[in-house]
Image (cartoon, helix red, strand yellow):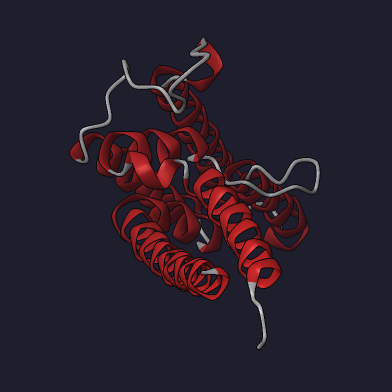
Length: 191
């Protein structure tokens, strides 16, 4: 009887491990879908070398959010909703990025259009572009999270709510694997 219980526990452990692998692969695929539809525009914006190209990518990212059905009424959380995790805040944050990019573009047009020495202005321009990149990457304190952080959570909640909780589900699966593994090992009797 003990061997039967032990074999059942090991079977459960096997099923849980396979489930964890499937969850991991599915989570990777779903994250890729988000990046393909919305997130990659913000990565592209960070890599652009001119404000007009950067602006184009940020505007495409904002439009992609709208095209995916994210509205100002959506939130990046299920519980404890507050203004700082709403899509309304996300859209206003993106609008502030757009305004900053346009300000750098205007500065560039004025500075380089006046036949001033572009060599001396080049360093200032590069610093302004670096600041924009850091602002889009949300790398102001060394912890880079990217400017679409609310949209990503909102998109997960709207489209794949189970995978919004993938970390918590993974912890439960790990705990069950350990529990059934211990039970299976403890009940195994070698005759």
